Image (cartoon, rainbow, N blue to C red; front, side, top):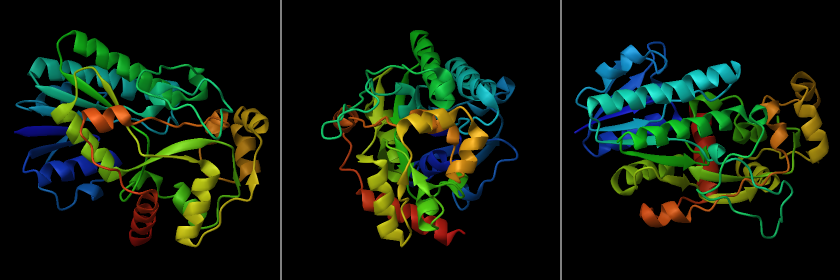
Length: 329
């Protein structure tokens, strides 16, 4: 059996490659020629170079492939909406079309909880916050969360491919912690708090999940997922302020003492450079538009239908992240 993994040099993709190799599956690691392969070192994978934005490189990579794990994506959005659409939307359409033409039997598409949009009530109820499920749909101004909107559009490409007969399952990971997030070395909230470089926070909530649980969720979706269905891969719903305090306790760092009011955060989001000066943080200040939302999720569907085990504790998520960053510094 042959599995092709796009985004194989990234956080999720590399962990997928490792887990597939551990199962004795022949892995083709698809990545751009100039990508760092550090996370793949020591794995018995077949390196295949190409680019999601170059359709001619996709058909040869998928020859004789049984299952495709499409984890490749543009994350930063620094090139604007056009860059996100080119990679995340057009690239997804291209590789799904190639998979259909090559007769790939099953595809697992790595989306994101970002594709689900935001809770209807920005402030919400702290004691009983609304939990987003797989049935929720996009409901934000695309300019306020470009990455999320691009993943929503990508899922539309998945559903179109399903309508043409391709067997695709969607997984929606929450905020992923753990060892190996090579692209967040300098702006991970874990290291910002550990190094006492995060002076402010905003009222908000998020869901944290361990990378190994995310990889296991992908494999379970391959084995048990229903064609065309979404599955949230999440674990711990937590207020951002509480998360930062816990990080500080576990790493010896310092959590921010100042919280920016929601109305001010939203105004600052319109002036990215000014926001960077005032908040003094390397985090993506355009996401200040999302202040006040509690992005809490119900992962019950995935846990039940994909037969997932109990997720790793929050402290393990934080500690594994911190220890890997320190070890590889």
